[in-house]
Length: 106
Image 1 (cartoon, rainbow, N blue to C red):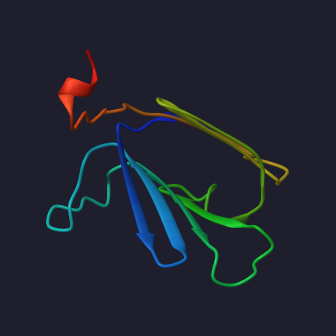
Image 2 (cartoon, rainbow, N blue to C red; image 1 turned 180 degrees about the horizontal axis):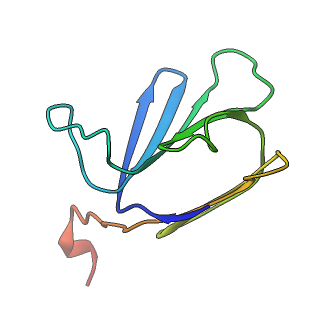
């Protein structure tokens, strides 16, 4: 699967981590169930064999899987899952760089 999702949201709660890639920015008030998304979750509280949980709008990418390879660049995220079909995921996204101290960049 190769998709372009423009927004990225990262959440951390204790030992639980989530990255949500979305087609458009959304909040709890204006959540749209038709918006394309891809979600990755990982917990470190209990042993689970190193599996991540993934989910998207379709039926092909829902469940717990082991990762063979992962790559992250400022505009691309790639996953190779340990499964027979639908094993490759490539997400292209936009990066917004926040520069809190402009005087540091001369």
